[in-house]
Image (cartoon, rainbow, N blue to C red; front, side):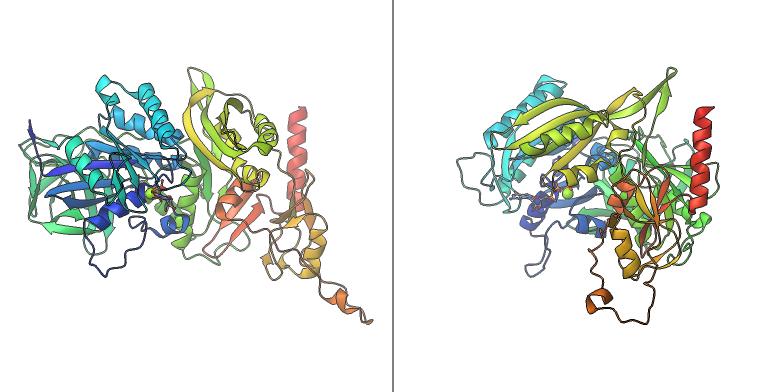
Amino acid sequence: MNYRSDIRNIAIIAHVDHGKTTLVDAMLKQSKIFRDNQKVGELIMDQNALEREKGITIMAKNTAVIYRGVKINIIDTPGHADFSGEVERVINMADGCLLLVDSIEGPMPQTKFVLRQALAKGLKPIVVINKIDRHDSRIAEVLKLTEDLFLKLATSADQLDFPVVYTSATEGTAVSDLHTEGRDITPLFECILEEVPPPQIESGPFQMLVSNLDYDSHKGKIAIGRIWRGKVAARDPVVCVNADGSISHYEISEVLTHLGLKRLEVAEAEAGDIVAVTGLDKVGIGDTIASPERPEALPRIEVGEPTVEMTFGVNTSPFGGREGRFSTTRQLRARLYKELETNLSLRVQDTDSPDTFLVKGRGELHLAILIETMRREGYEFEVSRPEAITKVVDGKLVEPVEALTLDTKEEYVGVLTEMLSNRQAQLTDMRNDGHDNIRLEFHIPTKGLIGFRGAFLTATRGEGIMNTIFLGYEAWRGAIVSTRSGALVASEQGTAVSYGLNNAQGRGLTFIGPGTLVYEGMIVGMNPRPQDIPINVCKEKKKTNIRSSTSDISVKLTPPVQMSLEQAIDFINKDELVEVTPENIRLRKKLLTQAQRLRDRSSARRSIKQ
Ligand SMILES: Nc1nc2c(ncn2[C@@H]2O[C@H](COP(=O)(O)OP(=O)(O)OP(=O)(O)O)[C@@H](O)[C@H]2O)c(=O)[nH]1
Ligand SMILES: [Mg+2]
């Protein structure tokens, strides 16, 4: 075996918000990849519009810097558990990883998940304790907890012997010894060069595994991956080995390598490097691109199973087709199936109804990001409440279960444990930091988590952080009865007016303001009782000839409760839908008229009696 000493390949892994993308900023900035006057800002790699808005990484991405003549290929990964599929997809390009741990939070559920992945793949870990500039950091304690985590997860003794670097990603500094003053990020670069093994290379005919895809309007599909054997140059004939083992022949158009935010065209690239190639129009993630001399497939990428599902259907509301550019079954179906090319942990299935598709993902956020992306592209459609995916194993019904971690204040413990026991959760751990901050850990079926986020934030007045991680499948524990209260449902189509809304506010909270177009069956608010209440929000005050006092003319309305897409999905019940268009997010009953709903209720009652 030979090695390439001029390259290192590393993945940056951590729990959400521990500072991965900020650390990549620090590495890019110090490598002088940008012109001095170039304004690059923060979270440079999070370029997708939704990533910027939400401040989280959604897709794994490649970049590279050059340090002392060595090219360090860097893979930034998302830390949110719903995007774990991204980590699984790209981690095999690397030989080492930076495991970031926040110096206050310490190892969190996703830290464990990604470390287990990295150790299983044989990656050399470097522990990076980040955010050491924070005055409330507890570095020694966090290091101890990280060591404990390695003890639990290591598969060989040498994995316990990991180097540690302390960083402030925002200040762009790193130290290997806490007694020294941090000046720049150099100690981290030095540690990478020293500790991460250079890529092993094999000579022989070209072979590369595709781990990522990108598109360019001029270049077409761009396949990104690591070269495991041989070399590749523009105009080389290659074959692509697809999922079913079939082979297609192509000619490479361009070979590109990463540097900072750019991709540079190179004459050729060799084993050990991470490259992007163009010219293969049907290539998919997991495919092997190889020389026609030895068209052998590398092991395909395995990504964990989805845990929640919901339906995506054509918009059947009375406003259907008005606000979106794409609203037909054919367009919706094509878009969903196209998503499978890059979104590896997603599954799409046709259903008995030709207008409805079943979409399965890793969590509510995973699906919500897809919905929001499609809505911005001009699609309109309707989605159902997410449900946990159950399956039958050895004749027994099983369901996904997760570990739930809540960080909150002591005063909310009572209400949270009560809410969660109704959702079939079991308390597994409770830790207090001695200052009113408490961490609760639960074991909970995924179905119990659906709709919980909103309830949790309300119960803790926003003073809480929740994290979940998939544990596995366990025996089905029976259905959970929804505890959500009833909706206020519009009983007429028209334009909502203050008078009608004021009446509605006498019964509960409203979700819409005056001037909103509504249809019969649209959910316009919620009420404290368990049943839905039909209400005419378009109703005007009866005109009389007698002039009323001025206070009567303008009704004072409470501002409507406005829900984000995620909150809307979290809120709806089984008999409801979220209507998503580029302009609006509406909630509705599946059955739009009061008569239909009553008929449905009584037939459901009859079938229970029988
Ligand atoms: N004080 C301080 N804040 C930091 C440091 N590093 C990151 N942050 C902040 O932590 C937040 C999250 O940083 P990101 O770099 O987006 O974290 P991430 O790990 O990439 O998050 P995901 O990709 O969503 O998992 C941002 O507000 C950063 O400014 C640090 O060293 N010190
Ligand atoms: Mg990030």
